[in-house]
Length: 217
Image (cartoon, rainbow, N blue to C red):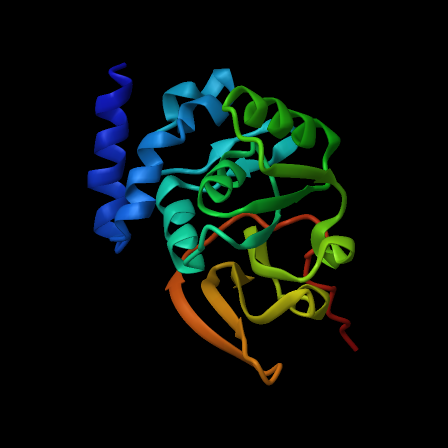
């Protein structure tokens, strides 16, 4: 496989047509080598428009979804970021190139170690991977300028929103199959929250964010 041709086609045929027009994001996708964060058995799927399987039943988001979520965060170099759902570490690496500091939370030990190894090999030094349940956030490092949920949730916990700085924003995929929607939630200076709907998609549920069962009478 011609890796660079496949990367170019991913960017130009999948990602750019999906309204990812931020030149900084598009350029970063050339710098951070996605194939280095994909398990060897699935390396051929690194640039395909699909979720890529990871150990323990988890998966990487499709390339165009990752790119559009990253674009929606509008990160600045001086900002501190919290990611929930590290997976293989690919999104954490992208965040690390855009922000000052990234704290990424992964509940599964195997994935947390996989991400640390991948990030180290990629030379990303400003990302800390925490082996913990991300539903409660990371209060000891809060507040954050931005929070990214790298997977879907039934609803965004108030505990995460409380860890945003005034003027901060959270981006994630919210809802229940078959209806899910990527949203950005902005925290105003007056501590009010405004939700902006971004695009429709479907993504694997983050562990710890399952919708509670509904009781039937």
